[in-house]
Image (cartoon, rainbow, N blue to C red; front, side, top):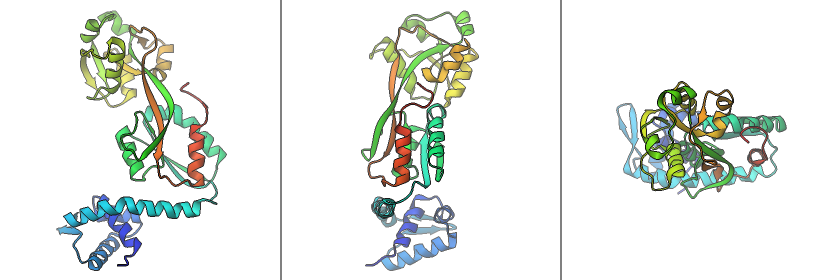
Length: 302
């Protein structure tokens, strides 16, 4: 059975999109064209791929199975086609990079400047997100490269470590004057803490480093805020203690807005990685961007 590749591309795009209108925008066609192509594919296959419910459409079980099988294979086909024309390609075109915002602002920004200066024909797109969303974007080919603040979960992702961040606990001098400086785990457990989210990734890492892997007391979490910038601001204002990467609070430390709390030297460590798909097309622009991001330091953090 000979099926037009464009029909399959439209189908997999529609399968991953909330509406045909959204799929149409990605395919640069009209919603009507998407509907017509889906009907053409259904006619050729002799099966119903979408159920029409009013103005909406949702995948049938057969459609869901077909989409799950086709999506990675179409990606491989597109990669192979791209690779065939990329071998002699100039360093030009779109490169999509993802990063957590705070680390990206400090680490990625100077490297983006260097990349754009070196290759003026590159068009760079930078998105910010969580490790889970960035990894998913790599797998779905929405990103070419991503900075992950944890090791990837998928075996389809390849990485190279680019930085090791150090976590410490910090407080404002005013807060410590009012509440006292904690020394031992029991002291820390009764203090107010500001954390990133309910999983307490930085907080737990620091607590176990400071008090041992079996330590369970983690203090009273009085505020969850999914922003390192907001965590720092709240801590500077005396709302509580928090655990943050050292590179992120240098200015606050220099201005005595924050001070480390009961540091015994060193700190909790976490590796940060540059990541990409293992089967990523080795196009000239991809290799140039990857190489630029992996070059030695060009700016903070150090």
